[in-house]
Length: 320
Image (cartoon, rainbow, N blue to C red):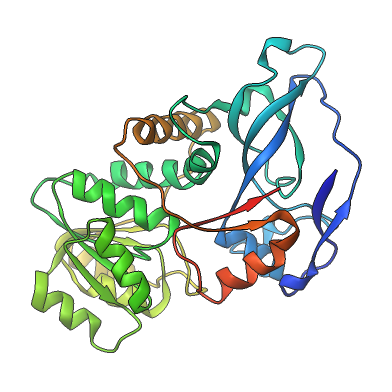
């Protein structure tokens, strides 16, 4: 089969398409013929050799990719053959996704609803569960004002929709005029370009202080967003698109009674349950993932380069 292998950490060009042996299903496993692969920003950091946490650096060589969608094409000896042909999405256990075939545990696969395409379901596998978990943690209430950073990104685009549906006034903060338009189209009541000087003042002029910040950028953008919170607000960190997490002084947060949420680890079953909810929500028309661009599997390096250049919107998928 064709796969994309990383032999050494470095620039996107280190992702090399090669022929590797087909996987063989082990005990409790199924083989998924991959239709779509989810790329995450963290994977670009891992490829570069700068993961958010050192423990996330894999042994080399490695096939990156932790989320795929496709069709079950074979099963292990102890798995029901009737599963063959099922459309599913699944995590891969941390690696192996940038490939035409993956072997995964049967317990990890999630059926794709009949009314949903596999690409759409793949886009929701990780981002959907993340957005739902963040909304639950923040407990957004009707009438509140919510600021979503990276509002045109994979998770941010879903948070804009979910916060609007919860009855909040939504401010979408995105980098660049094109992404500001996307945030508005997704339902943001106010959209600002955080690459422009004075964007926090513009938020205050248009919407006042905010009750909740969903911080997907970090760095100086995250700090500016934190400053827009009213006393007693909530700051939910979910990303570091800037390359660093937001630095928030604990005593400042305590003095202003601001709750800072970083996303506590959850069980594998809880993650599957959240992903199923996101898929069902999309199948019913209540949630629309934004697939901004797709690349052939052989062009994984181009996809990584585009993500690092901040040239992408929404979710980026590889198509084997």
